Length: 332
Image 1 (cartoon, rainbow, N blue to C red):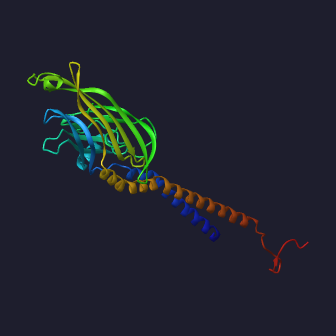
Image 2: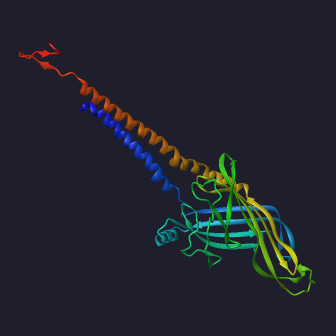
């Protein structure tokens, strides 16, 4: 029996290591690849040379345009939403402000309550999701791409201005500060999204002309550089255009190509480069290494036990004569 002890130990160790490999892939990874419910981040998108309608001076303007988005997660609301839906849900609050002159009155601002799946990042319609205090039903991706992002054209990105999700196209791979990223684009065609009262003088009327109801149109071409492991957007560019239309006349409302500031990009790389590597290690590298070692040990232990068993069965039995002396082989 002692001869079989070593193979049994080897197979036991192999089974343990194999189990660890499976746990890394099917238990540890799913529990690590989730969006945090206590998120607290600030992103800044900036264009130094935007052109816009200067509402303060009621005339066309140009200059630096800065959009700041602050996201704060709500762990209690996330837990309640998860219990209500039976899914792993995150609830994030976002405030966004666009400023063109640094005074106390921003060009635009919005508040959002976003509810989405912590793994896929897809919108979930429940639990108080809203836009500027009004109930809304979103679809598609809201703030990031899913964990383990694929190089496909099947994603959709939610546009809050139009209130609709638009297709996302995969454009290839690019490297940024040592990170291998997927490049995606999404286009919002020129679309009327609101009507607002503006001075009639903007559309060729006299300075004293009464106000008119003008249609406001909007288009946007977004480009995302996404870490495929975490789904986090490392860099982002928005090529946006807005215009007012009335009685055949068109006035520029906003033309801008805005991108993440270098500080925002550097912060994203610093925060997610190591997290991406660690998550990839848990999902791919460790499961493969542990599985291979475990299978090799199991096979080695099995082969050893078979060899020992065969040796035992082929041993020549020792016999004794009438006086008790051992007899080997055939005495004739």
